[in-house]
Length: 480
Image (cartoon, rainbow, N blue to C red; front, side, top):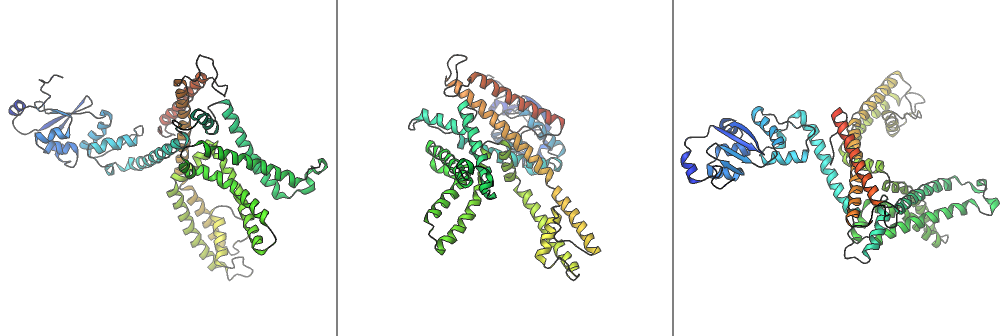
């Protein structure tokens, strides 16, 4: 537009306009809407309401441009979202469609001066639920990206450390990295199986004594080999990263440390064991510490998208889980005290105390039903039926929310991993790490262009699946 255009406000423009403005033309992103001054003035707390009531000097502070001859005001904003703002001015109801991004929608309505509390009740629950999920996923994604993407520029041996980091943390970067990840999972499984076999105390029945190897010696050897692998893996990661403090605070790394720490504590105590009472008591503590070896199973979360999604779901659904525990606690207390009052005077009753009644109510409401404690009277059996029925209803209440959250988290994790692989392949291609077509990646035997093409296909497949589930009405909207 030229400077002489009537769009720009000038003194001559003011002199040509007389009388109050009875209508406004709102131009948002090229789309024009006509609104009356009376309608806009009924919402004085909004941007357009202030525009209808303010002077022309202040009007230019509320819009991007204005043509006072035509009473047209220009806003460089999203015209699609403004349709919902228009509907709010005309009907007083603010709705949110499912395919809109909640974060972007919130930014738009905040610009127009509309609070999210005005969202209609039919859309409010879904809006807040999706908004919380996206905000949580965004924070977690940023933290995980910081944990996985290390910057080795300016560090000692940057090329070697980059390759080592890709080998340890990015199984899809090369064939060697996939092999290393396979070995890591293999040693976790072997360690868990070995822990189970040690508890069986097989002794000579294991069938290896004829080869000159006793069962305890074999189990101890496997334990030593697995711990050496886990220790080496953690030490290499620790030596590779630049920010040691952030690495030490990472939850997966804390789990790795707790998985091997009981072994070294047990080894130190056994070496110092001299038969004294203090050391014998310490030996009992070590037996308890050995139980922490079960944490090695959590190491599989590094290689399992499902376990990561489960952890994210539990983190995001802490309110629903807390309500579930609260409902169960209230129901257990009510049914336990009631059944104890009905059954404790009955001959040969199994309800000897209120804690025993708590145990019965817990197993009944969770539909486990051990049968070690059971009512004998007719009224007690009716109460037991009500207890079991209440437990089923209480457990079923948050299942839909948790299942919905798990599906969204699982899709988010799959999409994030696909996008990270796509971005990694794009960076490696940009660095020119393969040269001519068909050249293999360094140290991995992976054709980078083929891997890049596969990453694109994977992203498109996930996006197509999500669009199909959204249009069918059984899925959620896209989570990126």
